[in-house]
Amino acid sequence: MVIEYVGETIRQVIADRREQRYEEEGIGGSYLFRIDQDTIIDATKCGNLARFINHSCNPNCYAKVISVESQKKIVIYSRQPISINEEITYNYKFPIEDTKIPCLCGAENCRGSLN
Image (tube, rainbow, N blue to C red; front, side):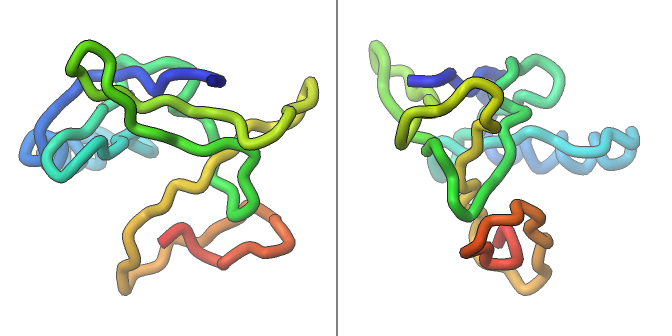
């Protein structure tokens, strides 16, 4: 285990409203991480360092939803030993959409987009 992705647990309808509000407020990015069909963790304003972990097409970590005392949580686990000063990354696994978000991970096997 590397770190838990911490934030406020919200429903999809609230996440949609917040994402729009964050854009209107000029917040550069939102940190919304889906747990399941209707539950999202919003770490935009009350998260921890996990929200700053970047995507990579060749990641050294992975994200997993676990249950602790019937509460779902997102935990980042390492795939391999991670060296001091090595960037921690995981695959965001964004859904495929027509409008592509460019990937800048620089991995040899980079897909070219996050979605």
